[in-house]
Length: 268
Image 1 (cartoon, helix red, strand yellow):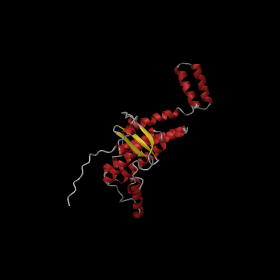
Image 2 (cartoon, one colour):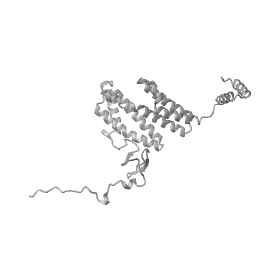
Image 3 (cartoon, helix red, strand yellow):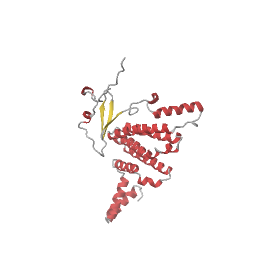
Image 4 (cartoon, rainbow, N blue to C red):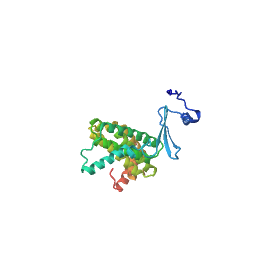
């Protein structure tokens, strides 16, 4: 019996079964420096996210793990390791002895990058609930690696991103409140985010870094925008008018404003 020779193939795909993504990108040009995102309907009838890249596009699921995988049957590797931790505590009565290896931390970092791409896409689309969900999830990754990683580098490598994730989480939560016209709640949320970023820098002995932090600047800018929506405090309005009157040497007007502030029992 003669031996069959392997058949060479050209690697080409027929037109009917072409996997060329060019038709998907037609009319959706890549713009350097711009994050371009859209929501599409998948063939499975489920909505998905697409992010335009220079050489194509990135497609993500809206819920669950962005790539649709279920590692070890769980929604994510983080969920799997958190379940392992719970089981360890149940068996041993303590979390002592539970740890994450370098390769496990690397896998968690790679998974966190997927959630980063999705929360960024959702923020562009102003779907802030999803941003809150995914940023809170990535903060749990940081906490888990910081607490259980065997290697010190694995405990610290993600910490550099904590201010950014805190900022995005606070910004998204405050944006939901802002849209609902809950301006005071939104301002409190932003301030809480700033406090958490400050605690981060204090923890690493860098209190002065807060003043240079881009994340803090973003939140302060949002706080100013929120304050414009708050009703003006009549006492503060009087104080401002008094200050302007004094600077302009309109002393009679200034005297009346002082009298009004005194009548209200407000400090000058």
